[in-house]
Length: 193
Ligand code: AMP
Image 1 (cartoon, helix red, strand yellow):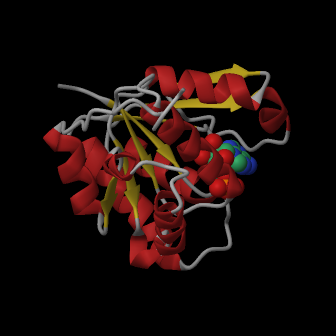
Image 2 (tube, rainbow, N blue to C red):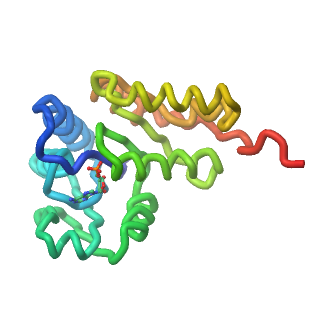
């Protein structure tokens, strides 16, 4: 079945080459399976590398980008579909709505903000779509340790840690997406009275 995979990732052009290589490997893997990409519509950083590779492999690229970024010429104009919106919130909403699954590659605040919204919606059971981090070379290890502290101190439930998958490689990422595995969320609250 053809899917649209939403990928959140860095907009930086100043990363180590290995990060662009992984984004391109993911782009090739998506296109090879006939899956499309929905993403932030940028031509910069990992976003640009990923989108160009999906497109080069014959895959469909859907970008959702705020007008102010288009005005700064940050948009990937070769996208099959480039949806312009006004706000960052509208952009996230559209990306979420269009996606069949979510992947976070290494990134900064923007990436983290986007993927955290997905985890929050997963724990509330508002979204029932798979979610995977590509933890390239342990990039997200500190974040997962922090998640562990949240659980230890009961800000979060242990079962919520199974609402997302952690992949070490692009192959593992794609294998998870192919598996269609979807852990079910438990009720969010420990005690409400
Ligand atoms: P960051 O991880 O801070 O580099 O932010 C990347 C994420 O935020 C992407 O997944 C985009 O949706 C969005 N974003 C941030 N900067 C840009 C940009 N210059 N062009 C397009 N999208 C961007």
